[in-house]
Amino acid sequence: MNIAIVGTGYVGLVTGTCFSEMGVDVTCVDINEAKIKALQGGVMPIYEPGLESLVLKNVEAGRLHFTTDLTACLDNVSIVFSAVGTPPDEDGSADLRYVLDVARTVGRSINKYTLLVTKSTVPVGTAQKVKAVIQEELDKRGVTIPFDVASNPEFLKEGAAIKDFMAPDRVVVGIESDHARKLMERLYRPFVLNGYPILFMDIPSAEMTKYAANAMLATRISFMNDIANLCERVGADVECVRKGIGSDTRIGKHFLYAGCGYGGSCFPKDVKALLYTGKENGYTMRVIEAVEEVNETQKSIVFEKVNKLFNNDLKGKIVAIWGLAFKPDTDDMREAPALVVIDKLIKAGAIVKVYDPIAMDECKRRIGNQVEYAKDMYDVVVDADALSLITEWKQFRLPSWKCIKRLMRGNVIVDGRNIYDQEEMENEYFVYSRIG
Ligand code: UDX
Image (cartoon, rainbow, N blue to C red; front, side, top):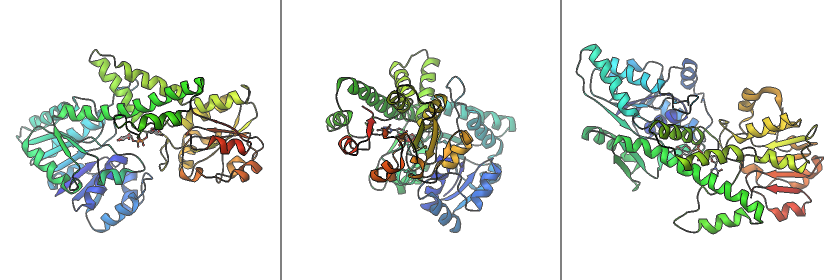
């Protein structure tokens, strides 16, 4: 089987690499020449555990190729996946420019049956727009060539994307024809051999499934953050409450961790896009509006706690930060709570020192020298008045508190992810504050 994947971002690259690992001949396409050159030379554009070795292996096996020329590879493939970006417009709607550009190229250049599968997260109704654009281009050429469109949303978690793709909880595919169904069934067979379901449905339902899944997960997080904030006020412990409710199988224990807010490339963008789709259709998604509002406030909570512990006077105080990425095992800082905390600390006159195992370059690229970059997790606390944990990287879980106490000049620790033990911290004579 020969397929093309357009877009060598995080989703496209993982998808293409995993299909090639199963023996499919995959051509990954991107308009960004520098990115393609780098990939051809074995340099990854993103950090994702396990990705680099899998790419190198499949390139060497001759099953994985990189090109900037989509038109040239269309004669050799039966399926084209579109995994291009859908950045949010100012009003929160998804910008479909790149998705429709792919459709246009396909319509202009195919000479035989082609199935165009949208993998990017797109609003309900996009597949119909994609279909119309392809048809329009075929009409302009005055040719009749059969084609199908399909929707195949991804549910990959950054940092666990390879594992998620290889052993998915489910694969969701929206189709309109039997032929498209057969092609997708064949392509995904190796991934669902262990009984994981491949769920076929109509295209709008597949498109909606992706938004509903992300909005539900974001809702759980904002719900727990809301509960955590109330716990603090009534003297309850959100960690006990989490275990208490998570043991109910109807609720389940995953995604109930209170913290300093969700970030990343998906939740914030998809929540906004869903709100926009609601508005466009004359419906206000009230729950989702609240989810977003709670998250916006929660992203400042670490700052609020530090500020309060210093009686609203952070001028000249040195605040160290552990973790910059929006979550562990990635260098991604899109919508990261750390950015909000850093900004507020600087505005309050604090001196901010940061450390992250992977995201230091990304942070430099985003905010330059507004903060001091430390060389490791101990170096960053030297002379600090306070230490704030924002991203729960594993290496931050069991630090040497003795050493930290020696290095810091203050003793305030604000834990934005509830990974430390209250009693242990207080025994070490830290002023310890966490969420909920
Ligand atoms: C998410 C979805 O999980 C994935 O299915 C979808 O395809 C893309 O969006 P990702 O953005 O990689 O994946 O991150 P995820 O691990 O889901 O975490 C998202 C954010 O929620 C992080 O900022 C994380 O810190 C936060 N989070 C997660 C919590 O605050 N509490 C939790 O209990 C879980």
